[in-house]
Length: 135
Image (cartoon, rainbow, N blue to C red):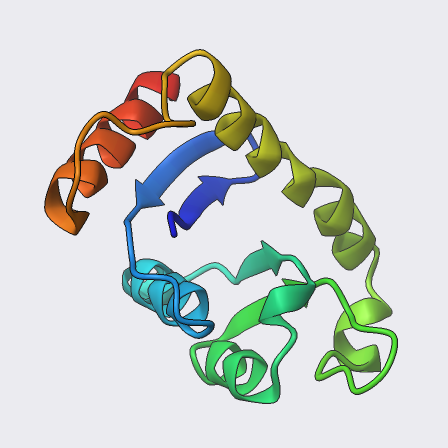
């Protein structure tokens, strides 16, 4: 699984890593990628899809002073009115879909649909290099 961290203002990929897909890896990877950026003086947001709408993940972001702009599930959502009432939340939900353009390009033009290497280290290197080339 290859999660990537994108800067919303200009669409640049600022971090990427490759993990084993186990159902929790993408949320753990997102926390590891965003944590060094949490010390900035300005407030930052993290936009993500419904797979990240889990109470533990949302609470961890709030403890880091990061606004969780995660797509809310219909039932049992950890996102409440504190987040959804702001206009920035609605804008983040539109912009967060830009990351799909990165993965579409990586699969079609850069050859990541079928990686030519095997192993987490080698495919991770190819994944990171491909996303750096996109940026």
